Image (tube, rainbow, N blue to C red):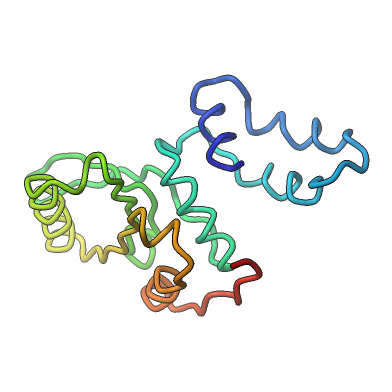
Length: 158
């Protein structure tokens, strides 16, 4: 649901600020509690369903909302955007989907980008992939928690 709402917001079909008043007038429909929680998570800057799912896992783990699409300058002076970040801790969270990050050349470019940002600004990376985000393992949340100095909240879903 978050991925769909983010995509509609990205496309300009809905505005995140319009959702809470709309949902609050729905009465007592099934799923209303989840819809109310979802309203606070919708953004117009998520660029993929994977990013939305990853952000959902981060928020479900009890971590603070990361900054989205954070512009940074790499060692070559090129402006890049991090999918998500905790700037104060210098932790970048990227979603590497299958379409643009599985070929050898893509992985090489990703490694260069991550190394360049680590060298310049001390950024540490937590990478989410389809298997890590859409699976049931909690390794993604546990590793991210170590990077930001927090323990993930116990999962309430399987």
